[in-house]
Length: 214
Image (cartoon, rainbow, N blue to C red; front, top):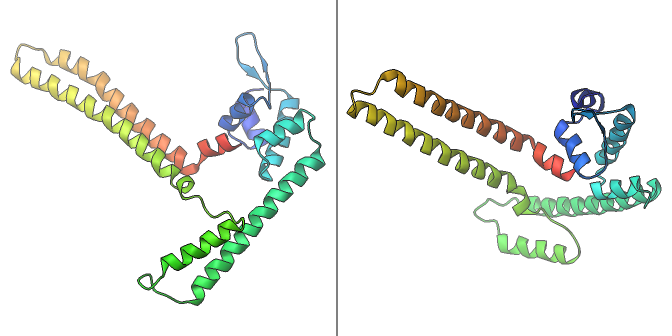
């Protein structure tokens, strides 16, 4: 069967499916013309991967599980310990948030030095707080998209401007010739904008991060 059918049967994106293939978790057959041909066994394997990923099990652990390096019990015990650690972190952060709420302070009177000291003490005790750089990664990706697309659009508009200027200066240049040159450039501009919007939506949905994480 084709990848679109597998998407519908398993409920994960083709991007995730291909990522699993890259990680060696899935090896579909290839037809004579090179297309992927997924079997029922591949669908069942993907369902197992999806189940473990729903529990937050890393790809590396799933790979070890499929290779027989660890048992299902060992895999789940490891993940249970990780989840327990995360739960402890969340409970500690909730406790700290509640302590801050009890002060009923305005933003102007909030003593950030004091609370940052409290955070640092808790971090030394093994509590993992939010990684700010990780939270901001989506914004960095968006800026990269806007920057790259912006440069391309500016260059294309400059080319169009030069062509129009040349047409105005050189009256002998036929209009059809100008149109013939400009139309492909406009198509590139439209394509760039569409690609940029699509990429931004992808980043907002977190699909790329999920694929990399899964």
